[in-house]
Length: 243
Image (tube, rainbow, N blue to C red; front, top):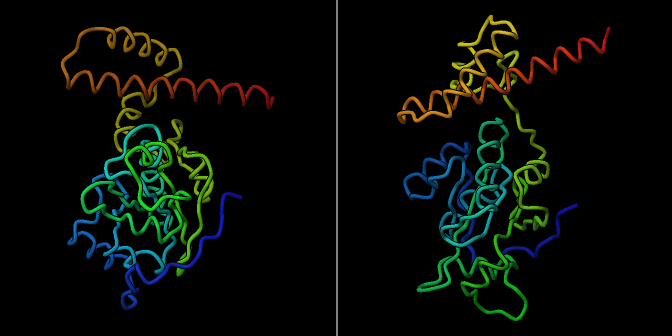
């Protein structure tokens, strides 16, 4: 278990707005207030927008971090959010940026939600680097929340949320992106020997100096072809074992 119960939110956070029947209306409002982050499927929250999302009809997985997070943990969070967004699961991925200077934006939320280290009244930049990000999970209708203390990796967070990442099936095309489908169509109907020959040709071509547009095409096609050859080999091995 990665949950630790947190004390209820006190009055320093805004009161809940009137109930809204659809998530779309909340997100439209957040768009107007600039709360939607530039990263795919991540909503930026603060004191003013917190109660528009948390405690409503959908569960929320919420990150507290520096205003402009970077590094492995930030990348893991972004990658996890992208998978959740494409999965169709009704889970909102959100982020609160905490400032340690000036007006110290959202510092009061850190205190209210019991994320402040013991003995500290305010966070310093070094604290954000050493102790954050921190994460909370709110079930639908819940404004108390629970701490997530699991690993900050895409796999661990997806497992906690109960979401399975769907990857492209090279043999059937299921769960593949439009770009992957385009590359797969190029190799459609070719034998294993032909695919291996294409692999050798593309590998040699990728080692050459290419223009930017051609580089994108060659590298993308090569990546798909490697996975396609591997998938065919695995399927052939499984078929052989069944005999």
